[in-house]
Image (cartoon, rainbow, N blue to C red; front, side, top):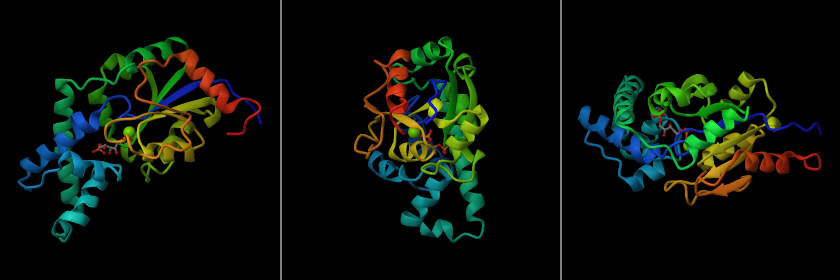
Length: 241
Ligand code: XBP
Ligand code: MG
């Protein structure tokens, strides 16, 4: 099997770059429900269940199917979901403007990796707007490609967004590593052939991470040489990933 040096890191966003499900998305959904007078409230336990479905619009529909079927009986239900999601995104962007902290080690590792000549990309289910809102311009500029949201028809756990990013980078999966936080993210990255480092969050602590290259609380202790070592272990000439 042809063996490639590590050339690129592909980062998930929500739960990986920052704990945005806790600090951004859940409060933003709840603020949108109040704004549109829906009387819904997603507490942490319910939100943890709803995270089984990626994509905010898809998650709203998943909630309605179980807890508010009447919402889907409206003739223009799809349009109402889009309207609700747009309101949620406005609230999320406003929360980002107040500052959502990056997870431990993220800023350092991004700068270290870029300085070491590694190419950086994003593969996320959230919207491009939310990526731009979360990251400071100088950090966002470190990413060569951003695969986000509805760029692809099938969201995680489908591999589409990772396959799109690999095509944009014109790299084989074996020249890259993915960094993720959830079981859906790991399924997506592994289905795209990517060795994957997992950093758990409060919402994903009990997820099944079978097949992960490494399972960590965060990236605080992770360096570029360590990532290169893990990559070579995963794709070394004597192993078939
Ligand atoms: C996590 C998601 C996203 C967010 C909500 O994305 O599933 O849908 O929960 O964001 P990631 P939107 O792949 O970065 O972990 O409402 O913009 O979809
Ligand atoms: Mg994630």
